[in-house]
Amino acid sequence: MMALKTPRAGFTGKPAEPDLKTKTQDVARYVRDEAAVVAGTARDHPAALSGTVLMVAALAFVAGYVMGGTPATPARSQRFWSL
Image 1 (cartoon, rainbow, N blue to C red):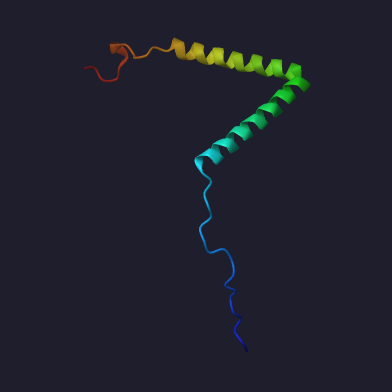
Image 2 (tube, helix red, strand yellow; image 1 turned 180 degrees about the vertical axis):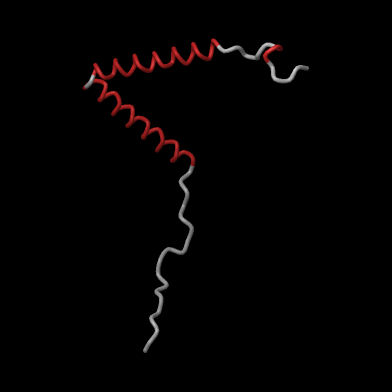
């Protein structure tokens, strides 16, 4: 019986990395495309958009209220260790 030879074909070099300018352009194109999709969806469904904006505003208000209502540092009498 004869042993099978493994093929020695294929890519043996290092692939070229895209430079920073190319990566930046790709990211900018992606962001533009996604913004166009979001804008198109907002035009098609204005009621859903207003509901979403209202919900985000309400959550931001509640988060700000909770964060603003907590004291930055506890009073000395409330600390676990007294110094």
